[in-house]
Amino acid sequence: MKDLISYDAYEELADYYDRYVDIKPSNAYYERPGTLSLLPDIEGKRVLDAGCGAGWYTKWFIEHGAKRVTSIDFSPNMIKLTKKRSGDKARVFLADLNQPLDQIESQSKDLIVSPLTLHYLKNWETPMREFNRILKNRGRLVFSVHHPFMDYIVFNRDNYFTTELLDDEWNTPDGKVKVQFYRRPLSEILKPLHLNGFVIEKLIEPMPTDEFRKAQPDTYEKWTKRPQFLFIRAQKTTTIK
Ligand SMILES: C[S@@+](CC[C@H](N)C(=O)[O-])C[C@H]1O[C@@H](n2cnc3c(N)ncnc32)[C@H](O)[C@@H]1O
Image 1 (cartoon, rainbow, N blue to C red):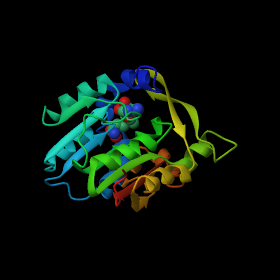
Image 2 (cartoon, rainbow, N blue to C red; image 1 turned 90 degrees about the horizontal axis):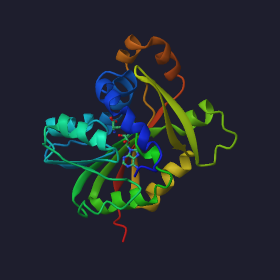
Image 3 (cartoon, protein in one colour; image 1 turned 135 degrees about the horizontal axis):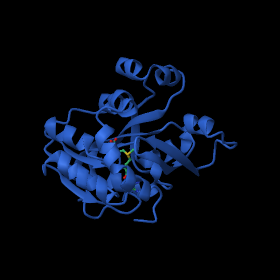
């Protein structure tokens, strides 16, 4: 996995991510309210956390009554942190979402949640096909990704319709870290869902919350005018053979 984009970045960022994920405004007061607003009732449900990071969602699923939580990530440091945060109450293991997820049984999950992870994958055919295989009939997929218009504008690209690798830099208290991700047009976010048996139930572009405004008023002003992330809830309506 070492040659995958942003592998080294996430290995390096894991401790920072763990320390800040509870309070960082972009996560706590923007991404999470968006994703949580799309979740169905998870009491008694079997959930896959795909790209679990430091385990914030994994712990939330456990605390909110999920029957079984499986969490995967390609970063060994993130996996360690998720195991610690979830107190061994989830099945947590290393996996690359670009590859088939053979360790996870077909039709075994009610819900797959993948916050801020899919933009690290160039091709969404394999993950969407795998999500279709793993979900029970009528199961839900909820995910958030970089907003395609935001990346197009902020990175000053000429061709909106290209899927391309971009270089970003995160400023952390421990220094700058280079992070790469893929930008793609909206149609390339929606097409792999349609081709792999999913129907979109909701697509939202939420505003940052009032807590965000209190924590970072300048960024709040900008983000109420420019969407940062796109949030989708889709339902599996067809089993792909
Ligand atoms: C921005 S973090 C989001 C973490 C978590 N979902 C959250 O919202 O707190 C992105 C995560 O995706 C993981 N990731 C990136 N590429 C991946 C891949 N190919 N397979 C599995 N995980 C990957 C990273 O290691 C990182 O933990």
